[in-house]
Length: 295
Image (spheres, rainbow, N blue to C red):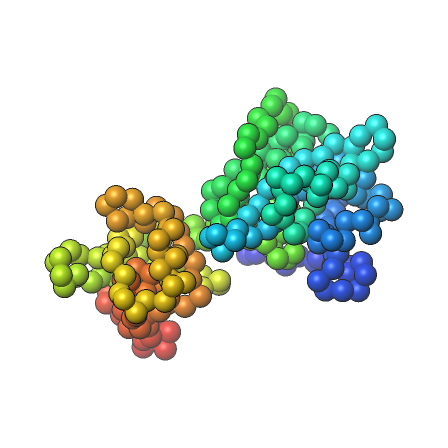
């Protein structure tokens, strides 16, 4: 199926690319805002932000150098306040001092009621957890409730538009790193999987890992075998990534992890410096450097 283009309108509210941004999409009633934490007070007069909607709070974990996200909903209240009022409450809450930016979704016709908000919050939480890019701070999420098929169809369409806008506004929270099925790795598609095989010289144990190149970089795939011993000269940043990765007692990686280069991906797997262009190969033994040169 041919993917069609989309026309997205972005408006810099105060003319600053790092400031508040309003985002709309043609043929969509949804409206999105990116709001830096320190700019909340400057948006009180915006009617859109006094409606019901879904919001995302974003920050960074100081311990793990990983993005944090919280997903919530806000109903329009009797005092005429909605999403912005909820953000102000979070700003005053010392337990949520980790966030520095919010992205909110509402509609031009204020059509999101409790039923729709529960559905959206549940689905967005599910998508974010499955994508496994951010640390999700949510505790309990609302159930879907009893949805009509018309409501469910409308909300699924809303979600697809929101996923696109979220990426444009700088967060891939809802997008999986890769859709590759590790149990069906072959050369039948344009997305050729890459393999790394090495034998540990000390233990004789075989290291087998899988990788996929995406538009973002190189993803070491869940199910890869990881060498747990670090070389003495390995930099602290890589040691930290290897230490906190989800690896089971059999040294099998339990999550997909993105790297900026094939060499970083290889170092993560092996625990020592390695040229990723040489060690990553196709199932037929073609090196990545030759694959990229169309040899």
